[in-house]
Length: 129
Image 1 (cartoon, rainbow, N blue to C red):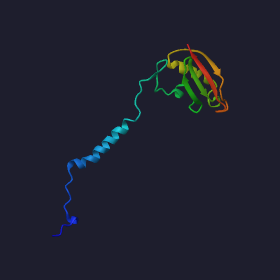
Image 2: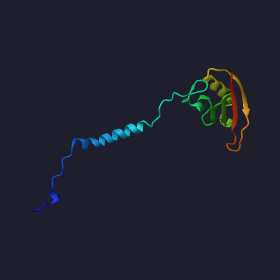
Image 3: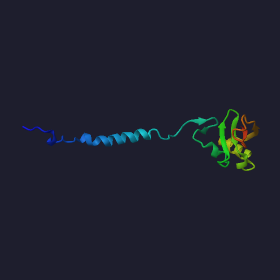
Image 4: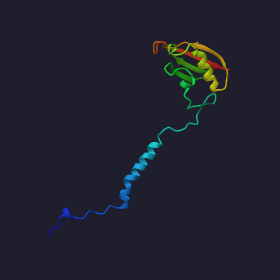
């Protein structure tokens, strides 16, 4: 008797084995989609949604805005005056205080700690009433 494995019938593939790749793909897609962007319910001081694009909210040209941050006193903006309109301070102040439905109390130029880190920038503090 010649019992060779070369001529053995392959075992039939079960339905569960055929579904395994499809199940793995579906599980991968679901796990990756869970890592994507989600809506945020976080709120900044003043009632501003954390998802707000603050550089765009200043109404200044995007190339001029370096940093916008919410502070206890109001807002701090660092921007390049050379790339902004002449009334940039007032426009940014009105727009940011407007996010909180408040008026502008005052705008002060703040001193940059390291002015040589980003030459030509100006830092302003915006106080809302």
